[in-house]
Length: 160
Image (cartoon, rainbow, N blue to C red; front, side):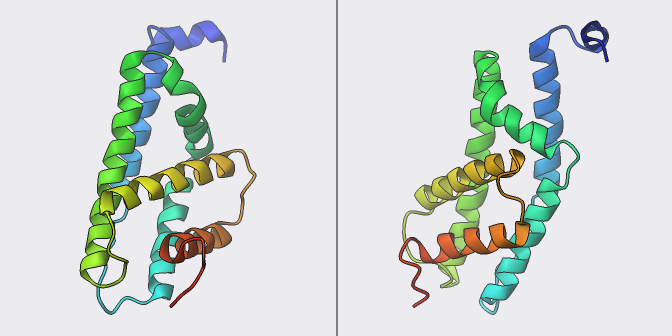
């Protein structure tokens, strides 16, 4: 497609980024699972829920390009788009904060600041998804295991 053809549909580069962000944010929030944590849920069930979420989120036809755009491109377009990207990360943090608080109330997670832990998780996911978008990480099963182990057990790796 010729460069000029884009401008039949979009006024400028900012409009292209804006539409990409809107469409992909909408997809993520529609597909993000509502983790139904229960006291009876075991580690394998949690791992399967995480793997399901990763597969669903990363199966979108634009996932690799969108992740690259989020990390490398959108923040440099203009202040409004940078703020939109930051709002997205804050929303994701709040969603994960709810998951962490629920896990803590069920005795599935250590008592610590849920917001801080959620920021940590979003940072891990951001970096990991970026590596995946660059095809430096390809095995989603291994990725799910590594993320779950790290979030659940930290650097020490003790399951006790």
